[in-house]
View (cartoon, one colour):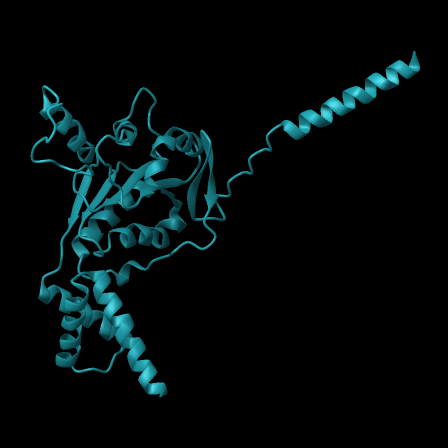
Length: 287
């Protein structure tokens, strides 16, 4: 009798070990105190928040030429971290004008007040319910940052984003806002006419649904290519901050040649020019 009991105990122990091996490992807790930025890592139908070990703490003072836009975003974010009413933000327009850097720069300024940023890729939009469930009730303020956001024809992900912006039957947490950047003002491609005979009877309704997505962002701010004088003013400020010893005439001449070479007049182009120029001058000094 004892031998049967011993064998049964051994069998139960083996079953228990197998169950432990097959059981999913417990998700590690997310350290929101020790980390400032996070990414969403999808795994099948679920996913988890992964801390960014070395977040880019961009200094907003380095953004030149967009003071009016910067101030609007700063004001809205200050309201948000103070637990006051604030809006989702869409930054749209020309490449290289500082849209992404403006959002990243908020972390350095507002992290001490409890702001955290979660970077989302476009394909993470469908995971928004899981992301929100993990952030709801956490004593921090979260910006879900969707960089370079846009949707092509036939993609339904935009409806998931619109639901979050509008809210559905579940109330959106007060500690979450969405800040998105896009090269498109309305996030969706716009067509002058349909090229297929298979079109909707009421196409204006479909177009309205897509364009209405951008309307869900309470604050929508546009970035435009700089005029030549604006571009040169930015170059001068960067050159002064780096203490580059060139005459204004020579500096502007080189900056305009760089702009023609790169076919861009933007804040990014101005900074890349200054990086190149400073490197050249330092290399000459060492020769």
